[in-house]
Length: 216
Image (cartoon, rainbow, N blue to C red):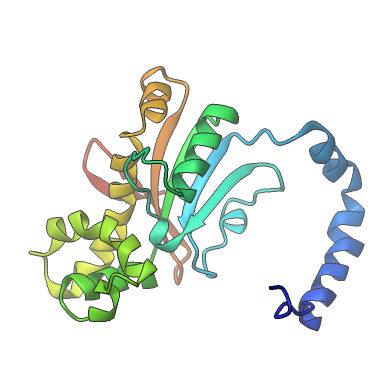
């Protein structure tokens, strides 16, 4: 069953050796401390799988600072303890109940392919995503309620609006988890919604008082 597995490409091997000889070598004691004492991240960040979204670089974070989870379009499903496999829900549970993070951040971004796919699916332009065999389409159905909220906007701005709806839908779904709701209401944890503009390097945060995303 593993006959198809091959060695790493040489460019990745070379990059690893470069990291080991520089970053690791210069910070050995820090890495050993992380290994011996375990992780104590103050925040969890749920972001998109998109390779252009480099969370640790955006916040200048070191190893051990963020408990990170990435998926298509940075979506969180609603609480649904049905005994099935739930990777995102499991990550949230571990962060809140075991690591007891103080902050839970959902980070969306510009030019999100997953969000664009959801928009295409909801407007009838991506029938392949509506097939029951499409894992991506099934996942993106989580964002359909967001599309219903922005579908009356101008077509030009719908996708960007839907990118921000992906953040809001996730924040709403997070509060359906009893342990998230309890931690928030007890003041032990805060939720944050962010949107990152890849091209400009901008970062916006959701302000519940105004219902809008404002520049950080």
